[in-house]
Image (cartoon, rainbow, N blue to C red; front, side, top):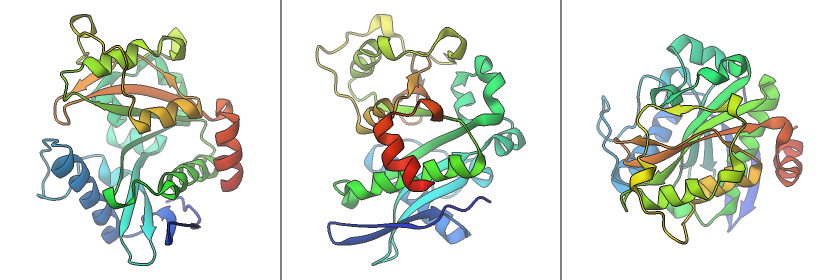
Length: 252
């Protein structure tokens, strides 16, 4: 397993560090955090082997990036990472349960998939958590020699999908070239939705777009999470200059 060097920042009187989980107890703590955020807070309906633990068939093949509060030992942020070799072993990327990725086949040896991103509610006002997660992802890409990040950014369907339709419609200038398009297996019926005049873009989507990610296609509907999942592809060589200075150079 690739190792991410520990990085530390003091923000809001907290001592935080980022690393890859290196034992079952750390992975379990991340999975429990995911359950609290996705199920208890956001109302996802997950069919998992153990109540209170968000896990699926991909977890054993993934690396788990975690942010820890070193003052109390709590895992307060996490990302799940699926590298190309691991994706081959498990039969594909998680994204392929929602999208046809056929047009990206030529990139598979260079694609790292990220997902299951969440932050403990008590730490969401601390910018250091997301900064450490991004720097950890940058180190992971650099250490592995990977060039692409792919992931699904989730948009709540609590309003029936109208906000998700508005967000997608507002991103026409951020669409990937046709040769990098993916296709949802259960598409959001955009033509039947009424986009809000002023859409509310989730922070995770904003972060990807600011970093320079392209939208690879229409959103898919995820009934388990009741979200519209927007497929995004970030090319390391096209990373926004500010992100490159702050995260990639810091991780190098």
